Amino acid sequence: MGLLALIVALAATAGDRVRVGLAWQPNDAAYDRVVRSIELAGGEAVILPQLRPVGFDYDNGVIGSKYVDEFGVLLQQYADIVKRDTYHGTDADALLAGVQAVVFLGGGDISSTLFAVPQPWHGIADDSPANATRDVSEYLTMAYCLDHDIPVLGLCRGMQMLGVVSGAPLIQDLDKFFDEMGENYHYLHRMMRDAEGKRYYIQHDVVITDRNSLIYGIAGTDTIADVPSWHHQVVGDVAGTPLRVTGVTPTDGVDIIEVIERTDKHFALGVQFHPEEAIRKHLDHEHSAQWFMPLDEAVKYFSALIDHARQGRQFIQGRRYTHSDTTVYNKTEAECYDFFAVLGRAEQGSLDGAAAELSLLLNLFERRHPDAGDVPIQEVAKWATECGWFAHASRRWEKTATPEYLAVARNVLGGNRVLPSNIVEHDCREDLAYIETNGIRYSPYENDKYVSGVTVVYQAPVHEHNGRKYGFRHPVHWIFYNFPAAKSDPFGSLCDEGCGHVNATSEDDIVR
Image (cartoon, rainbow, N blue to C red; front, side, top):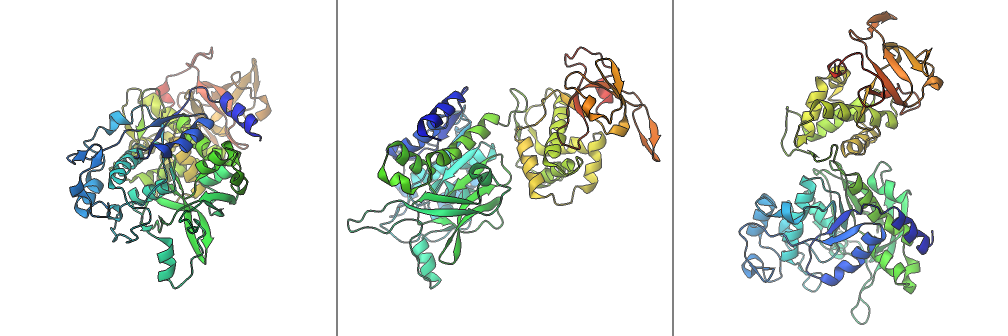
């Protein structure tokens, strides 16, 4: 796609623009390329204010000298406070109000005292010095975004901050890392200094390790070619964290982590490279642009962030479902995701069917809890175990769900449902008496006789079929919507949704 065509296409779909925050950092010039990237993708860029911990002293916006060592690294005693209290007690709610997604930019090294397991500083005084003021603000901002499931995209240092806040350690210097292993490092991730002491971006490929991932959904390929790279630190390991590695670059015999994702969030993606730099080079018609990823490929990262933010997690206008930090009903958040994923298997194992099952569950939940405030996932799962056929899935709760079904669960729970909110019913064919299309009755097994918005589906009274009981004590009829999967049962809406028909019974008989 040519540049003009790309801009026109993006502008045509902009509509209600998503407000994308740029995490605060002290170098105003660094914002430019990310602002341009967000705007090219159809979003509205907003530079976020600085976040400061409760009780810390600042002088003209710079953290007090008593908080840092001679190299600018945050002292351990204060890093421990930041990690313990994060944004709590700050005005983060007000400062991030109205922002639907956040980008964390590249830049210097992160204070190693902020790691979950602190490390001594790498000791290279002339290379990417730490900036504790920025470190603290970004740590608080990232923690807030993750706790509130605000979509985040971390670029280079931003990916490292996603890792640090999630509990992952960093390799503080790749050159020293390979030297300690007795191996030569060939500077694949940034160029060596030239005769004038300058460095430049270098290009390399990234291998995607998991097709069931955000990054594969964005790139659509197993290898992302010619990414712009400039870093000497990298996430070292994700064991014991909610992160997973979804992209690497084989480097001198070692797979260096290039992409990480939070498995428990709607969209929390970190890439160790710089798509925004490729965008800048192409827009500025630099000769070196030809060496790096194409413009339309680079824009995809910002488009994906904006798309997920536009979908949002708003299941009902004015109400937000949240991930709880505490365990409710003795089930962890991860176990609840597994439970939702198990539900999806009721639809012959198809991903479309899984999404429909979860959509239906949440649609029903909303009808039963119209005045609910923030509802943790655990409460929805608890309700599901006590609600009709959903309860059967609880018997298989402890089974590990496949990554594919967990992806569906994350997607649907994130608000990207495949069924409108008024679709609240479906039945297996044995539970149906007949269907009626334009006044003519047909067997419920005749799929070609179903017409969306027209066909009336009649449930059957209690009866036996092949030795098993089916049907309902108080049969209902409802309006057909669609078959979300090839072998799916029909899904539809109750007749009180303005479809011109009258219900035979109340909603209480639907939620069994």
